[in-house]
Each structure stands twice: as C-alpha cells, then as structure tokens.
Amino acid sequence: MLEVKNASKVYGEGDTKVVALNNVSLQVNKGDFIAVMGPSGSGKSTLLNVIGGLDRLSGGEVVLDGKRIDNLDENALVEIRRGKIAYVFQQYHLLSSLTAIENVFLPLLFCGANRESLDKAMGILKVVGLENRAKHKPSQLSGGEQQRVAIARAIVNNPSLILADEPTGNMDQETGAEILSLFDQLNTQGRSIIMVTHSPEVAKHAREIIFLKDGQIVDRVEQKGRI
Ligand SMILES: Nc1ncnc2c1ncn2[C@@H]1O[C@H](COP(=O)(O)OP(=O)(O)OP(=O)(O)O)[C@@H](O)[C@H]1O
Ligand SMILES: [Mg+2]
Image (tube, rainbow, N blue to C red; front, top):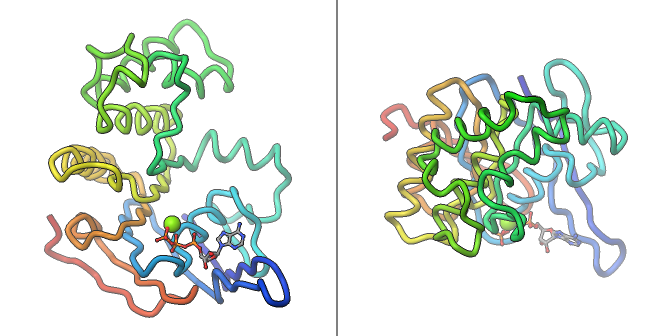
C-alpha cells in the first residue's frame, strides 16, 4: 500500500546541517499497525511528515498505491491528505470557534458536502463515543474528548492510512487507553496505522515496532501477542 524507499531528509546546511532521516526504507501493508519509537530528535516526526506530505524529502521516494506522492505539487498533496492519508497530532489542532460536529464536518465541506454529510459527521462522532458532545466547543471538552474529535475528523473521509504523532502524549493513562482502543478498533477494520510514541506500554498496541536512532531504523520487533 505505502512504500518509503531510501528516504532521507536534511535540514539546514554547514554548521546547522541536521540529517533527520538517513536512508529509511519501510513498507506498510493494509491492516498494519506500526509503532515508531526512538530518542528525541531521532527523526520520528520527520518520518511521518514526509509520508504525509507535510515536509519534502531530500532524497528517496514515497509511493502510495503504486504512485509516487513525494514529488506531487501542493494541490495534489492536499487531495491525498483529504482522502487516503489522515493525520492525528499530539496537539489536537481543532478549530476553537467551531463545535465538535463542525470540526468533523469540515473535511467533508472541502470535498463537496451534501445533505448526507452532517449525518455522516454525526455517525463518526458516534464511533468515537461523542454523539452527546456534538455541540460543545473544544474548550468545553476534556483532552481525551478533544483528541477523539480530532480522530473523528481524521477518519471522516475514510482514509486507508492514519499517521499519529504521539496521539496520547498529552493524556493520563486512562484517557490514553480510550484513544488506543479507538486505534485498535480502526486497525481491526483494516486501516493501517503508523503511530509515534515514547511509551513502551502504548507501543504494545502495534503489530510491529520500529526503532529509529539518528535518522536510521536500527531495530524492528514484531509483536505477535499484542494487546
Ligand atoms: N524544521 C526543522 N529545521 C531544522 N531542523 C529540524 C527541523 N525539524 C526537525 N529538525 C531536526 O531534525 C531532527 C529530527 O527531528 P524530529 O522532529 O523528527 O525528531 P523526533 O524523533 O520526532 O523527536 P521528539 O521525540 O522530540 O518529537 C532533530 O534533530 C531536529 O532538531
Ligand atoms: Mg516528534
């Protein structure tokens, strides 16, 4: 489904040059759940950013369903982000003036909303267990609830790949567990997930863990008996 081939990313030059990714190759198949771990600065977020098109590669390729996407122009990238690939961040990035349902509705609006779109947004809010918070603004929601709205917004266009950068990083364990069971559910439905985390407990949810160090994959562990 997704292939990262010899990806490299270099920031800056001369004294400030940083090799954030150094020849990383990775294959993601339908239904994969990959956790990315490694020390701060090892390139985890950079890896997600180049896959999601938020950042350009310095070398290598990203191929989605047989098509190179790393060299697409901004408009084409936006299309992919709206469709096949969704992003969930540690900071939820909800629009504070919009209600939960409006935040979830927004991506549908960009894709040509119709009469059914509001029902669809409401249906997804139900999936994340927030149908009774639809009219709340982000400031009226707990952190875990805000993240669930952000996940609802990410999946409303039915993406095949979800990129999540420390999605439970801001939460206590219990709230984090709710978010993780949501990811488990999405993965069981066949969606692929790549999730960055610092927590070994959180990484247990993945089917495979890859470890980055200095921009390189230094280890891979398959988890057969994952939670
Ligand atoms: N926009 C940028 N300009 C220059 N250097 C950058 C930029 N973004 C990241 N870097 C550098 O690239 C390296 C990898 O950064 P990245 O954000 O991918 O690390 P990370 O593994 O996600 O770390 P953390 O666990 O702290 O989030 C770091 O050394 C960082 O300083
Ligand atoms: Mg990071």
